Image (cartoon, rainbow, N blue to C red; front, side, top):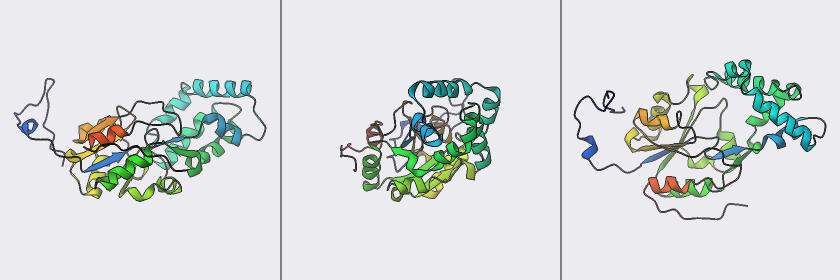
Length: 250
């Protein structure tokens, strides 16, 4: 399905004229979830909501520092391997990390349930306008996410689910991006070829890895705050559209 030539260290082994042909228009766009269209609420807000007692700024700074340190804990590192291939592995990965902080261990499951709750996720300011312009121009849309639960409820909660015709969750396929299986499955569901499909995400290896499956890819810079402007108008330009800025709802 991909039609990608076999390459040696310097380039394609067999001569090809494919690069001389005009590039086809983008017919479909696949979006990652977290860090691309949505971002979860801040850890400080979520922790304060989960803990039974008030937490002042000094105590919160200590908890957040311990969360950061926990990322290098051997048990936490081990739990992250193949994190997104099943809902069980996903839950274990996050609760192991939360539990590495003594203050959070008693509420590790509460924090994980927060992570799955639609109301704790915030769309980026330009998410809806981008999706609306793409869909309005006839571009098919899909979600391809490394995740441990079904994302449709979150999109529906924010009124964004109706834009999408394909939902590919890694845990339902026992694999993770950049496995071509996930990208190709979305392309089949949308009825498009990989060469006319663009994958948009924020992880160079996982989302950028779509290029290895024959898709085009665009990787956003990491670190955008919840509810901020994400720079998704670049996706519109890559799809051959002229971005039109619209005011966010609400």
